[in-house]
Length: 455
Image 1 (cartoon, rainbow, N blue to C red):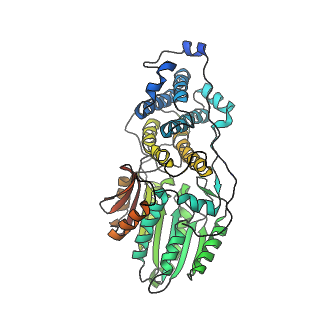
Image 2: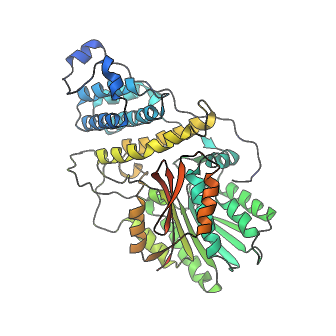
Image 3: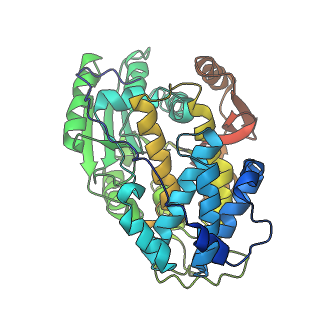
């Protein structure tokens, strides 16, 4: 947990109540019959996850084919069986329903639905901007981020043992929240604390979580914290963005590498749930009739992710850590993407009941962030669709193709993770897959952690 001091902010942004106007009886009776379409008395039978997933798929197809009548029929059903304040599956469904209507409004297809979305501004998702203290407490609520922090810090400490200068490049979605714990551990080294250089991409993120500090202000807090632990920390924010594969950051690191490589400086690349924002699109094996003008077509040229990883390999890092969510949301086919997202994002909704009470501010912030992710995956295309998570197996292959070699996490690291998991709900678990560690919820993969050295 971060150990900064300060007064938490009490401002609150939350998801506005979501409602869809119910069609009148004439509209329903005039609608084209849909096989299996239920009457209001039969809605209860549509409550299980498989049926809901199928309804969402039918709704997506109707919107993409500009079939407003069928889309409205399905929306009527989903709106009646999935209130936004219902159980975890209902809230998940409500988020997907909202995202589909936003997609209709954004793309201009299904003009009746677009008009409906424009008339009802409660479709917007408002995410909270955190203070440092709020964000530190927020990421400690669940193992979703703590798992990656714990595994990465253990691997980093082992890799940099004996170095007097450690340069950490922190590509993290959580604004260096991992770093104070790492500094604490470094400060207690037997050989004494090293000089720590910390470099981050210094362009404000436009994806949750959001922080109410500039990177300069954050850097000042980290430097002061390190000083309190008798560790000399140099902080640098390089203007760089995921949209171009952190090109300017890579250029700066190349220059620094030429200067410091022979000085015995350890270079640590810490990638925590950030690389999946680098643009990537996977062609679908299914026919794609989507004529959405926002869609860009993948080419045969090397992707930005491939070029980024090869550039990292060229820096010859002491160790590279890759932690991310274990799902596949890169398909250019909406239905494929919807199915993958639905079968992964039920997990954060299912877990929230174990650590946040209904009606709490933190729960509202937490679910707003999930809703934002659902909307980004479903409603957007092209460079606006930044949530492009890839599975562990694909990242492993990418790292190997870039001439990295995987290194195994030790038993002590696994034991430390298990101790951390004991602080949380019983559904969380840990498993080892080859050299890697995977966080699970009720047996389902959630987040993976991998460690790499130049091959």
